[in-house]
Structures are given as structure tokens and as C-alpha cells.
Image (cartoon, rainbow over all chains, first blue to last red; front, side):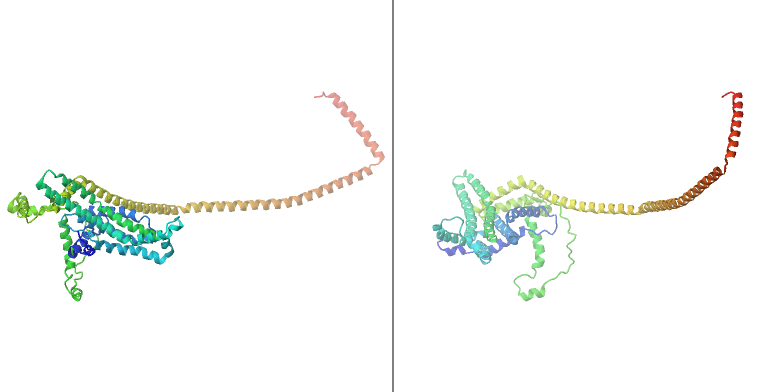
Length: 222
Length: 256
């Protein structure tokens, strides 16, 4: 357990470069219309996810679509590849997630405040609040707005890191227990189940991008 | 498997990475290798039907073929087993928690691939086939549209060839209409002229009749005036005698 905040920002740079660059190999660019199975399934999956994701945007919001697709694919692939043994998931590092979250969140909020100031400010106060609550609510909404990038980053970091830690700990427990009482191989089944749940890390991409998307939506229409 | 992907990716990347990092910027520009071959992007070469053959889903067949002349069929297996046992026993490969998680992942992946691999492959093939069918349908509909256009055009051309019949009929109709109008007018003229001539004739006839009657009346009047009383008596007596003679003759003959 580390006491200092700075220990959150120690990063293994070399491994990180490899781990961030590698997923690109798994996403080939087709140079033909009818592709092999790998690319066909990728295209189908991307279409499926993106239709959901981009359906609520107007034309102006759709200029974000490439960014969102890239985000989804990157986070999803890096999370999945981090599940392999002896691999590294860059999304376990707070630096990576913060450097994704802060610019993206800022890119949605700041244009909203700049071009549609009144509407953006109006979002800080829900309709129909009693008069005496207004100052409190505005303070609370401002804080919740400003803390969004931190929540986005920390959510992703905590989820992935916790999953990885659990797997490692359960694996170590399995090994230790196998010399003590080898019938506890059922623990490996617990590991298996944990892995299955962790593969829902892919769903976290949805959480990430959806959160981003919702803020985008709010500020695009604002 | 991925080894082949890496090898092919490395082969394509190697030529572009020849002048990559660790050299000064000017050197890169000076020594850049431009296209020396004649790469052509179309037509794209066809995809192979099946992937490369692998054993255990990991090791390509070529490896087994490589070792076959020296060690026969069991060579690679003995090598594999020996290597694994060597690494384990000498603790070159240490069993850690990563081993356990790797084993769990392997179980999951093998289970998923065995159970759903073919299904997913068929699904991907179906997607491709649907795409091809859509494009083919579009192509066929374009061809059909063009063929329909051709047939329509040919039909119209054939109709144009037969247009002269229509023109002849129309010409005939018009000629007949002219003829009829001409005759009608002729008849009208004839009738009008005849009318006027009849009028003149009837005027002449009437004049002559009137003159005749007038003359007859005048003559009668004059004759009657010229008959004296004596002549009248003599004529009447003669008539009575003729009548008596006729009566006698009539009595002699029977009445029919």
C-alpha cells in the first residue's frame, strides 16, 4: 500500500509504449471489399457498437464519431490484452486514463460554455427546485461537473487494477493452497469465474464512452 | 496463428522501417527508398480459402515438416515435452500466479473456441455472403434496367419503321375529306345554279301560260261576241237533229 499520491504516477514507460502500440496489429485495414473472417467480424462489431453510440447525435455531434470509435477500440483491446498472462494493461495506470479523460471532457464542456453560455449554465440548476435550495444545488452541480474527468479516469483505473489484483491474488492463493491441501483446486474455478467477469472489462469501455457521450450530448444540445 | 501475422507484418514493415529511428532527420530524407517496383493495388489477389495448418492451434505444420527428416514423426513432440519439463525442473520458468491465471484463461479460450468457433466462422461467412448478394442484386438490377431500356428502344425503333403506314392512312383520309368537300361544294353550286335556272324557266312558263290564257279568253270573248242570234239558232237546231240520229243508233245497239 503506497501512502504518497505521487506513487500513482510512476509509470513503466518502455512496457507502456509496447502495450499501447500492440493492439493496432489486431485491427487490420482492409484493402478489399469482401474481407477475411477476422476483419468481417471486427467490422460487424464496430457497426453494432457504434450504431448504439452515435444514434443520439445530430450532424454536428457526429464529427466526434472517429474519436469515439478509436476510444472504444483502444480501451477495449488494451483491457482484453491485459488479461493475458505476463502482459501489461496501460489502462491500469492513472496517467493514461487521466490523459484520456481530461482533454476529452474539456473538449465537450469548454465549447459549450463558450458558444452557448446561458444554456450551459442553466444545466447547473434542475427545474423545479425550491428557492432556498438554489445556492446549495448550484455549488453541488458545479462540483459534480468539474469532477467528471477525475471520475472517468479513476473509474477505469480502479476497475481494471482491481480485477488484475484479484486475479493475481487468487492465483497465488491457489498455488499456496495446492501444497497445503490440493483438493482446493476449486479455487481455480473461482479464478476462471473471475476472469469471465473481468472480460466484462470490455463493458467498461461502454461505461467510459457512454459517460463521455452523455456529457457530449448534454453540451452539444446546450 | 499470430506468428504468421507477425512475420508478414514484419516483412511489410521491415522495408519501411529500414530508414527508421536512431538516425538523424536529414539522413532519413536523403536515404529514403522510394517506390522502385511497380506496385499495383488492383486487382487485389484473391484471399486463400483456408488458413495455414496448425497443430494444437499454435504450432505450424511447417515446423513438423522441418524436423521430420532428422527425427521422424515423434521428434517435435519429444522436443516440446523435453523443453517444458526442462524449463519447469530447472525453474527457468517459475510457476507463479500468472501461471494459474494463464491456465484459467487457456481453459476458457479453448472451451470457447471449440464450442463457438465454427459458429462464429459461419456467421462471418454469412455476413460476407450477404454483402456479396446485395452487391450482386444491385448489379443485376442495373443490368436488367439497361436491358429493359434496350428493349424499349428497339421497340420504339421498330415502331418508327412502320410509321409510313400511319402517314399513308392519314394522307388517304385527308384526300378523301378533300374529295368529299369538293363534291359537296360542287353539288351545292349545281343546286344553286339549277335553282336560279328553274326560277327563270318557271317565270317563262308562267308568262307563256298567262299569255295563252289571256289570248284564249280574248279569242273566246271575241268569238262569242261575233256569234249573231241567227247563227245561234241554226246551230242549236242542227245539234238537236244530230242528237236524234245518235239516239236512234244507240237504241239499235245493245248497251254493254
